Length: 214
Image (tube, one colour):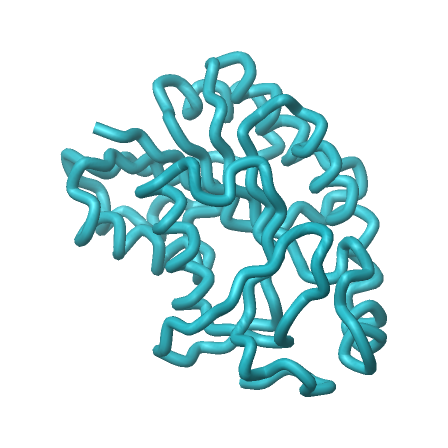
């Protein structure tokens, strides 16, 4: 069995990932970590453990980390001190866990071109510095990491996306939550996919738009 820890497990993308893993990857055991465990109590089973905890609680995080193979951070670390990311790295090192998938935002490398890039930078400015630092912390952690640079999200049902890499121009402005979840599910199935990389994910058909597509 593959043991997967999902932090921020009640997030919209995380919920899609959990549903798909339960249905599609029956060789996975899930640990769902969230502030209010009652929100996901209906998912608890012999394959799904639900833990109430906060990423700022290092001791609780270390407890949840024991025996895990892969960690998915289902939220973006906008904390000015990056305590969630620092705690996750410490807990992973303490437990000997190597593989982490971390949610982040587009624009952390000035990789988004044109008018949309200008607008996006303005919109995310309050959390941009913390997002940049979170990515750097993971890149320098020695862990097998993937930074997932999500676009502006919509609730379309289609799974449709292109992937760009750290030194490439970001393609697209928006994408569906279903698409973002699909990338996470792919990496959990194949942990070597996008390992030690920072990937941008978006619907390339939205390239050239100057505002998000909903």
